[in-house]
Amino acid sequence: MTEAPEAPETAADRREGTVNQRGRGVNPSLLSGGVLVALVVALALVSFLWTPHDPSRVDAAHRLLGPDGTYWLGTDKFGRDIASRLMVGARTTLFVGVVAVGVAALLGTPLGIWAGMSRGLVGGLLARVTDLAMAFPALLLAIMFGAVFGASTLTAMVAIGLATVPAYIRIVRAGTLSVLAREYVLAARAAGRRGPGIAVRHVLPNVAGLVIVQGSVSFAIAVLAEAGLSFLGFGTAPPTPSWGRMLQESQELLFVHPLLALWPGLAIMLAVLGFNLAGDGLRDRYDPRSVSR
Image 1 (cartoon, rainbow, N blue to C red):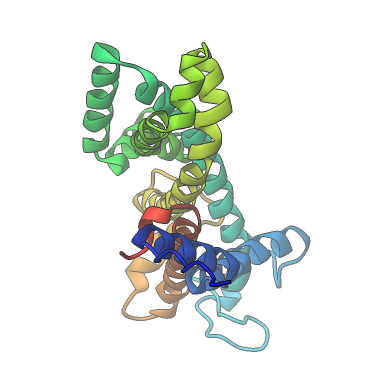
Image 2 (spheres, rainbow, N blue to C red):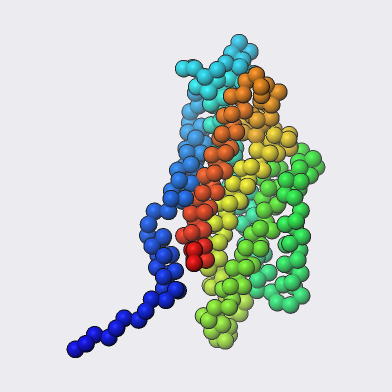
């Protein structure tokens, strides 16, 4: 018997195959970003158990030393060990990022689903309010919080989290509108399933990937925001080590001892790069629309 000819491959099949291939293979962005993020996490975890020196110990006899066998990255203008402060600063950075992203995700995800499922005036009003909130500079909001409630790690966490909420609302709303247009959701509505049931059973699982991707990007933003706030004096207060505070303390000696600014600046750069690369990799894995056509 003559075998029936195979159906020609469509563009949709090729895109689906590419997505599946990406899901099975190693994503370079996700791998490299994961390595950098793991390095920051490892520094933070190790700092709970061990640091080369006491990060808060002031020693006037060892001020502004260069890297050597005792002080691996040198000391600052107060004689404190830079390597130890970088390790504890990683802990502060991750703590701020986790809480800020958690606040934004817990508030922005349900509000985004509500905005996507609301019709008429309510849905349009929520969308416009979100647009207005995103137009307000996030760093300015955080500075206002610091000025009103005082400079502290808690203030920085809450301010950064609230400033990131509109981004979650917008992306989750877009994902919700896409899910609501699918046939199985229309069938569920025709069968009498109500809004809350559709939101929990169909919408939330489908927008979870978008929330994860946005979380990695928001983490990078939180790292930069915390460093900026601490540099300006509105973030983590001394003597708690913070990468941004270390940059702020090094600026008066920038041209005499540039290594004081190099180490925290390099730490911030690698942490932000790691979370951004991880976000790119997660987007490729969870969002088929990112596949090149």
